[in-house]
Image 1 (cartoon, rainbow, N blue to C red):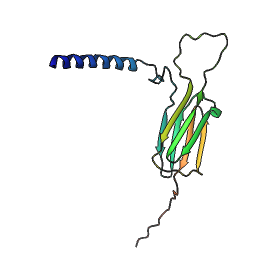
Image 2 (image 1 turned 135 degrees about the vertical axis):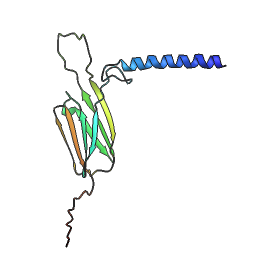
Image 3 (image 1 turned 90 degrees about the vertical axis):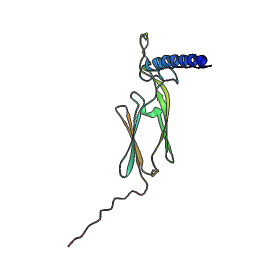
Image 4 (image 1 turned 45 degrees about the vertical axis):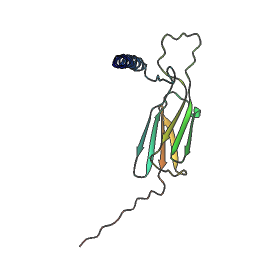
Length: 143
């Protein structure tokens, strides 16, 4: 039985190493979801009174990007289309295009009436105010 366990373990390690080599050798933007699947990267930051979300979507038409906020969850989806040039043949394709969807769980609630967004230079910026965030300056008196 020990001989079988050793052979099984060695085969498992060999297959695991091959899978690591295959996944590690994929071009940036590729994933197990499909070759060169477009998956925009996002950052979520927090200030005292707001959550800030930055999403990289270079080359996308802002009209093709959709955002919905439900509670603490931000849903994004859209499409980044490949440029069409007639009379050309593609010899190498590393840039990912196509549809995308992303779900971002925010750390806390937001005020739905105080959400703004901009899209500049390939970056979608969302600012969402926290509910009832008030800065109160307290004056300290001393003798």
